Length: 303
Image (cartoon, rainbow, N blue to C red; front, top):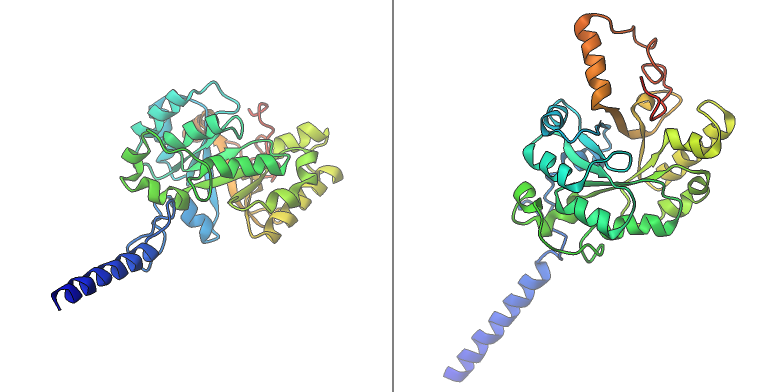
């Protein structure tokens, strides 16, 4: 009887262990304490999931004070620009850490969809990865692969300041909080839009207003340009992915369905703020391109 009782206890323990193991979340699928829902601390992703609009401020400066001023000014996320700036990952790590707890979530536009770039961006605490010039399925897949831990991706686990920013359970919650944005910027990308949008794990597809014109030789308002935007629009929304574009396209009747927007850079905001302060700001819709007329400014030519 004693041996039977010991055997019964052992079997009971094994059964309980099996049940607990089956109920445990898979790696990278951290669950909250209420109803098994994901633990979301990325407020920008929460708004995406709710179908709300988001606007991000573009950051070029390495100054932590400027970064914090922008990150706490009401924007949903910071678009930290590492494709078209000399910012280093060391610069950006200091900026994000100096302003931990900011209301705007840190997103980084990386130079390319490489393991090296995305690994460093995520390790320093970025909760959004923006990948430029996505022309192919392979590049879209790479954006997802290097942004998320297994089993959803191939991100390596190593040291970083992410834990100090997002908690000791970061490894279990990171996948649920990461936002992957891919940018379609060329006629080739437009031609492959259906295939790109079919890649699992993409949260936003962004219609890049400047480079659609740059690579096609057209400009906003021309039929060829508008047909590219229309195709991106139709494909993205058909796949139930958030559609992104410049802030000038926000709430425009001719640009329906856009919910994710890139706002101006901090130098532009300082200039606009100074004009408001001095009482010299132009009337709405009469300023530089993209200020109230629905035409996005051309990057590199803003005034």
